[in-house]
Length: 144
Image 1 (spheres, rainbow, N blue to C red):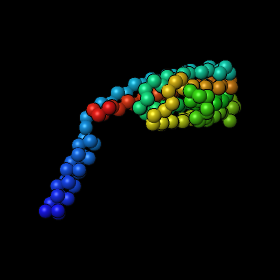
Image 2 (image 1 turned 90 degrees about the vertical axis):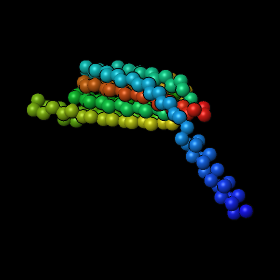
Image 3 (image 1 turned 90 degrees about the horizontal axis):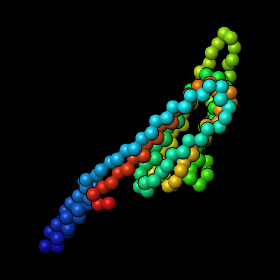
Image 4 (image 1 turned 60 degrees about the horizontal axis):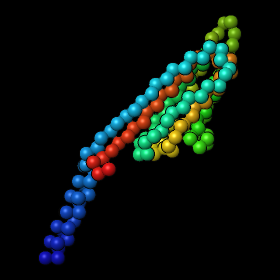
């Protein structure tokens, strides 16, 4: 009798546990894609990304293609703390050779800080393009 009770209790607990994981989910994805052309640029540019959902995933990818000069990319959270950076620049400059340098940074954060995230594009005589791809994934379960 005691063994039957333990078996029934274990089976019921397992069923309830699995039912919670099988609950319905709804996913909403918001995305932005920006292309910024640089034509002998040396002026810093700022791009803001607003985070307004508490339970989400922040997905950020920044690509740069530089054909002349250099570009530095910096990412800041809403509190002004630097969250990442990289620099790319051309080293070969001659009449006989053209260099193209690609750089990329990706940032994935679960439940990021709310507010405006900033991306600084800091060019120095830069020729090229910076692409910013951002998605915000919000997943809600039926229990939320």
